Length: 113
Length: 117
Image 1 (cartoon, chains in turn orange, cyan):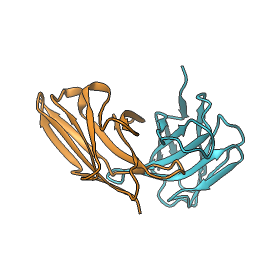
Image 2 (cartoon, one colour):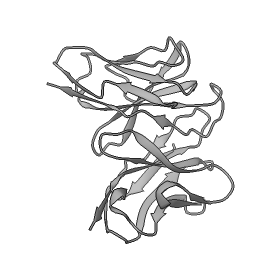
Image 3 (cartoon, chains in turn yellow, cyan):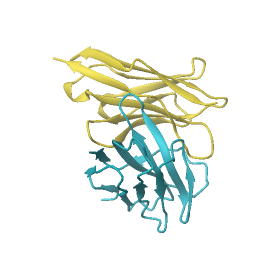
Image 4 (cartoon, chains in turn red, blue):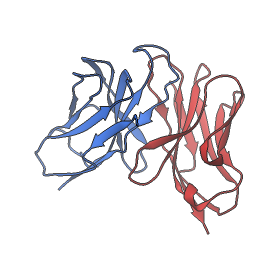
């Protein structure tokens, strides 16, 4: 069965430090992969997605993620954290044709001044 | 601007009452979804609909009902049978042909927070 695992439910970084949020997937076929961000009491917004082609994907707000098939990973990074990056981040995968996403449980990112 | 509109944003309900959450989209998307979000549990799928007049149960459909009479609308009713309805509810949609193999990218509404008193 497909699954998505986000390592670390809470991550705390200092402003200006590297942000690294981890996501691993389990799938028999290469999936489409997504990172979403959610601010308090709001819906989810797409940060970036991997479908096919280039494995390093750039998204909004300076985030990027790299699809590594050998490691079944799709980690999210940002070189320098900003206070406005504090939010909940969700990794998701779609490896089937039923258009149902499989979700990780989310990682709450705190950015300290 | 195109998007998904959920209403109300906040809703309070007494135990034993049914409530209906509205979800309207003007993106011309075929498929629509309802998720429930609880702290630490991520997003759990309640119901989804890939085409008008058709819908399927998700992982936690018990105590909920939906209808899809129009492409633009996918209301969710939280019935009195739902034992723990206090949660944040998210509606989403996907474009492309119904049943087709899209990328699965979801577009979300702003959510509705239901509190049972």
